[in-house]
Length: 509
Image (tube, rainbow, N blue to C red; front, side, top):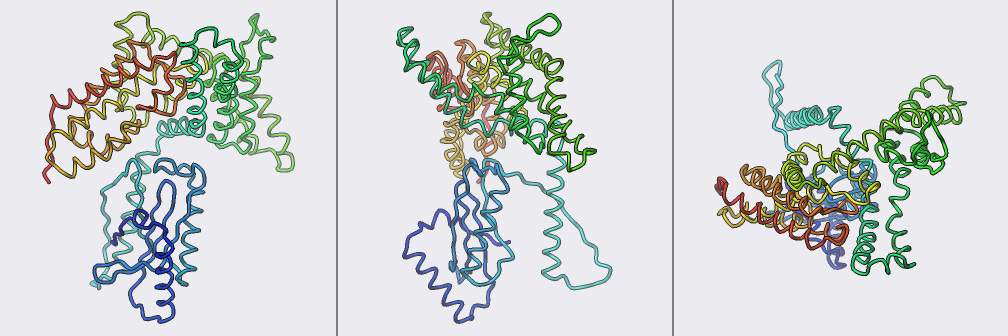
């Protein structure tokens, strides 16, 4: 196995450096005296893909070619691949450009890739030779590949469950909308704060109306956007039909229609109804394509899909979605949003304390539609600040680890994870610090319970989702920024306190 340093950090793109690289590559091509194989290093980062080709000369690595290319917008987000096709295309271009520079093909690569989490699998493979033979380098390479394939199959088996796939699909529906949630949420936050401090005199102004219009941009057409994304995620070949169904469900015309003696309610069931209807529509679409000839597919399939889905939505799925949405609203109003202080505080504590285990299992993705539904119907989600306390408590637990540990490597890892932790990115701290140590993870969960209780006590809500940690301050509803910050400090302090009390076994250097 070859290991490469991170050339992305060391290469500054200076002209002199590139001239030296090109000159060296030219010399090698002209003389053809180089006998060692090239080493092709590929650094896949959040913004760029860096390809480097070179060879080892003594204790130095001599670079003969290098090429950097940026990802397309949002193909990679925070170290995670969100569009594998676009990322693969960039990697292919980098490889081809390097091959042009060195004028020879590149067949092997050493990849440096880092994100929030790196999963590892320990496995073994065996190969029995029929007779005594010399084990060659190719045999060892084959065993390596067999081991990788086996590890991949193990990971796939662990992750490829129906429940996890459903959660993943739910999360993927909303991921493309997060930038809009954040942007509109910030605008609404400004408007809400101004309304709190300047009163009704401000709320009736044109300025307030225009700012409110901008802030509600994504929420006014949220059913349509969710419908389109859900169609794509469920495998539709005509994703716009999901947007059409979202538009039907939220149409004001529904108020003029009476079924079974009761007028229909525009937007009833909100996001839940949209997802249910789109799931049915995609199923109908796929079934239609099994028997409808290709020559008729263009107009017959969408006609059947749209008609049946709309009827099913009006008579069945929208009422079902409405019942689910109402049930979630009742649950929230009778727990964390309850007027009973004891019930509210206990609910906030339980929600905050259990959130970190949910994040580890991926089950937190199931909460995204609940947040979106609450924001669409109520104007804010009271759940998000209480759950965000988990990440804040992680910070407190990590600070306790930094103070107590004598292990310099652990201390460095913890310090590197603090800034992302303050910004609401908790995975580096979960998987790099608290979880491996055991007790600090429990301390963080207990601290999160305290923080969640404080958030619930003050009824702190957020007007949008997509951010956590200190940046969430900008999205707090009704001008409750000060009490939110009190909850933040309580989470930090509680995480620190419980971790200090529980202690941990300091790893040996």
